[in-house]
Structure formats: structure tokens, C-alpha cells
Length: 140
Image (tube, rainbow, N blue to C red):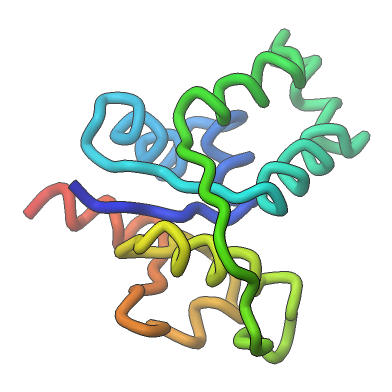
């Protein structure tokens, strides 16, 4: 079973819109993959769920921020571990939290649409892939 770290945009998209990210969250929900977060990722998810432009979609879909955040918590495993000692994602050091989480979780894949992360392709045997590419792995 693959161990995944999903970036914030992937998670938010999966919660709010039908599409590849939604399909990936379903795979996680059905036990086809494990999903890992750390405190920094959870904090960012909560912050983004409360952005006015996002809460507009949440209200329109008759959902609630607290319920969406509970769903993330119920689907994910929170890991705590050492901080990264280096800045891996040079263009956006804020993305290092996903690398750190993946290392601490001994994850197989970071799932992202972020160009700065995707440019790395792999870090210490952790593949960095788009949602569509990860979904293809489930087909094979």
C-alpha cells in the first residue's frame, strides 16, 4: 500500500471538487493508500479552508470548515519527527514541510501540482508526482 503525502492544494481540491484529487481521496478512504500529514501541513490546510475565496465554495456546497477539517484528520496519519536541516525546495522553502513530512513518514510519494516540488522529481527515494500520475499507479 503506497504511503502518500498530499500537498495542501491537492487536499483542498479533493475536498471541494470532483476530479482526480477527489478520486485520490476516495482511494485513501477505501484503504488503497495511506495519507500522512504533519502539524505544519494541518495548520496550512486549516488556514486555506478559512480563506474567504475558499469559504465561498464551502458555503455554496453547504459544507462546513470544521467538518472538512475533521475529514482530513480522519483520513490522515499525523507524523512528528525531526526538522529538515537544509532548504530542499530552493524556490519556495514553504514547500519543505511536505519533504519533511514524507521523510518522517517514510512515504513513497509526494502528490502535488506545485511546479517547484515537481521539478525535483524525487528526493531521497521519495517520488514527487501529480495526482493523475499517482492514479495511474492504481490502474496497473
